Amino acid sequence: MATTDRQARTLALAHALSAAERGLAVIPLSRTKLPALRSPHRAGPDPGPGPAGRPCHGECGRFGHGVYDASTDPVRIRELFAAAPWATGYGIACGLPPYHLIGVDLDTKSGTDSSAALRELALRHLFTIPETVVVLTPSGGRHLWLAGPPDTVVPNSAGRLAPGIDIRGAGGYLVGPGSRTDHGVYTAAPGTAHLAPAPCPPSLLRLLLPPPRAPHPAHPPTGGHGQGLVQFVLAAHEGQRNTRLFWAACRAYENGIGPALVAPLVAAARDTGLTEREARATIASAARLTGNRP
Ligand SMILES: [Zn+2]
Image (cartoon, rainbow, N blue to C red; front, top):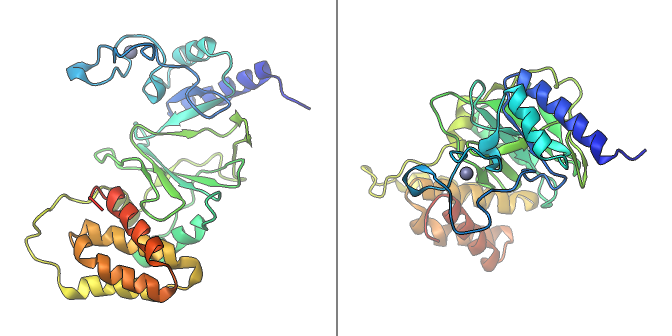
């Protein structure tokens, strides 16, 4: 039976309030998964009265600042939903106390096996994915909820760990379980709804943080290190070629040897069956995602 929008909003509000009781700050979302309340500053170039010229994050006192509206206060949450009667879901802000939530978004749409890529990262970096909240998306994807340390800002990233794995960190949000969207309902995986977000394993956390900026490394990287990355690409079988090349290129750029390793990585990738064009495109996107110029 179809759920009316009114019922959907009531349900979303109930889920949002219960998430807030657990300490998670929430905002209403529309059926498109976007914040339901539009910016009060969208009409003009006026960014609002944000400090030091940055865009307003709610200092104007009005609603409509996306994830910056997020709250754990039930009174405010009811006000937010009252202002957005078309809301059918809710978003949970990442990076805020007490959990400093980090969302690991395992996508299935891009044709990559992101779960396998995560398992590969776990093996390679010696971490295990802890038992934690898992939210199932209508498209067959999964969101793992992890708790971050309070003193560390984990940035949002798309495909930096591996293709198909996006990270929701500070300034990002996760669609809460029970939310209804155009594509279906988000649900907690059986047996995980009652869990608290488990602490992010330290070696996974290190992969999520931006690389230290070191334009002139104190110790020039040895040939051995770059050779290891090339070997990693050469050993790829068909399903992993692009994932491995991307991963190796990210590590190369993070270690300041990206430009020097482009040619060897392209050659290795061609050895595994990628075209030069595919290889260069993957390396270029690794360069961009690590803050380098391709
Ligand atoms: Zn404002």
